[in-house]
Every structure is written in structure tokens, then in C-alpha cells.
Length: 119
Image (cartoon, rainbow, N blue to C red; front, side, top):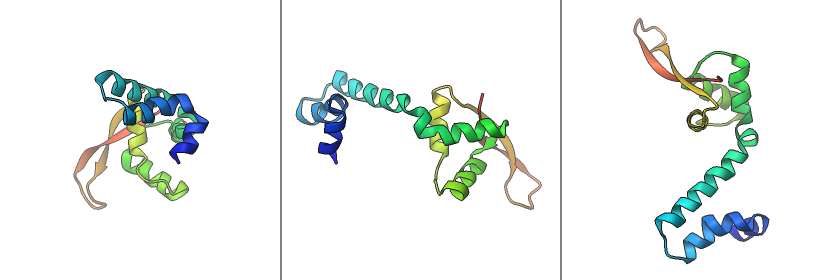
């Protein structure tokens, strides 16, 4: 797969793969590789995370991590969407919050669970 990917995007894979594999690792080369990966993912955010952003925009209110994960598992077969929400919040595209939830269905005690919403 790496040879095919290198043909499709030689500049990117030179930085994140070949340079790191075939040259001495320095703080500068590792930082360049991480920056390249971050830029690559950031440029493709709408394609990669559009479903998450659209869902939270449409909902219009904070949703717990459990609710988000359940929605995407049930409707799209996608697991662990909370990780994507963390990334999107770190980029300023979603906002972190918390919402009260009950520990069990019959519980009288509520605790706070991490939540996200589209700002």
C-alpha cells in the first residue's frame, strides 16, 4: 500500500514515511511529519468528519458522548465517534460541554458526562 500511496502523493509520503524511515530522526523531521499529517487531515475535515458535524449541527444542542456513539453505531455502523469529536473540538469546530446523565435507568443520582455541540 505504501508504494501506491507514494505514487498518489509523493511529497506527503516523502515527509511522513520515507524521510523518517531512511534518515536520522531529528526533532525537526518528526515535527515536519506531524505537521504534514495534521495539515492533511485538516484539509480533508469536511470529507472525513462531515457526518459528525452535520449531525451535531442538526441536533442543535449538546449531546453526550454516549448518545453520539450510539447514534453513529446504530445508523452507520461507526464506533467510537467521541475520538473524532475530541479532534474537532480541539480544532474549534465543536464545543465541549457536559450533560447530566443517570448512572442506571432507575438511578436517582445524576453525574456529568462529556458532551459536544456544534457552535
